[in-house]
Image 1 (spheres, rainbow, N blue to C red):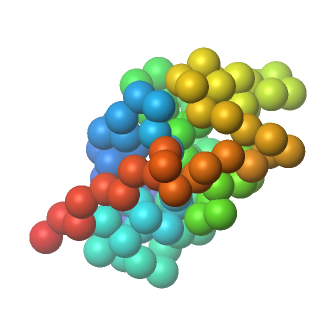
Image 2 (image 1 turned 180 degrees about the vertical axis):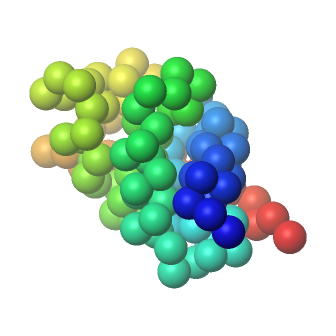
Length: 108
């Protein structure tokens, strides 16, 4: 599988994340059947910023930290986008992470 194909599969999952919810790099990797490729999911998210239909701001690390925020234009754009969806963030950490976490379905 090429990176382009893997990245597109990642974007398909990310496009399904509901408004006001987030998921993690690892949850996406697991849903794609590649549980050990969370870092590759991160690379895909980093490469997605020119794709308007991929809500990259909804992908965070497994603890709810906004680890990807440095890859967004502006100092706090990722946080602002999430807060606009009603997600509360304190010190780059999503408050009540388990309540806004969306787990994608595993695809066979």
